[in-house]
Length: 341
Image (tube, rainbow, N blue to C red; front, side, top):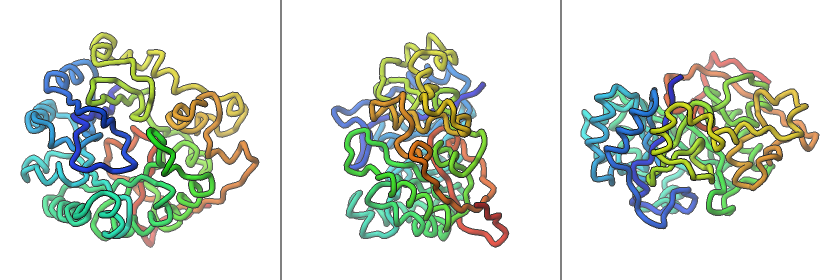
């Protein structure tokens, strides 16, 4: 078994977005030697560089060169700054480049993230297209933007990009948490106006009637924070495992108690016909709420509710990060798309 690994080289960032989950108490960074330990401890199929703006790391280029020498598929998630710091040759080495955009207009994006952020990102998207580098726009679905995501999906299509959406997780604050109604209205609007490529948001998969294909959290996905903590999910609050444990346990780290918690199946869900698809919903969300043993807060089955969702399927490209999070990836509509209800 090989692993998809999310790595935060640093939690340093040039922006201070209100919804960000990164630790801001102090600046922490992983060294090149620690990246070597990671790659020597696991069979790694892909690495995504996220958390902070990785170009602020003093060994950023050396680490990229090392990953390239190892032949590891590498992706990066950026607010535009780190991508702008790369040479064309360095940028071409990435399997996919993700840009964080949460709003479908320049005014909203810049007001939320910082003046000039929209312009920086779309300048770098155009650059990636010239270099034939795959681009994905990554958005967090929040209570303040869920209605605008269908338009953002269209903007992504117009710029040759896909849209990847994660539901907001209350790591630090509930200020942006979706209500039950907003969650389902957000996915309904997004799916009605897009092609669905990948859906690993477990409760949405259950409602769509999709089988198998759950995300790899707790099984074949590992996250490493800038402090050297090893997590099964980027939002996981239990941070007792470290790179030393990974070096000692290797791939057996998924057998640890911390990773095993993600398989907790709430009692209600044991009799549910969607338990294999859903597994009780997002374990990270349930853990953050302090109710890992309860069904996902967005579960309609506990309410006796029916959620009508229409969707059209598309064919996804190779996206190394796609199976490593509770995420949904969509593209623009095609005339030959297959619509299901």
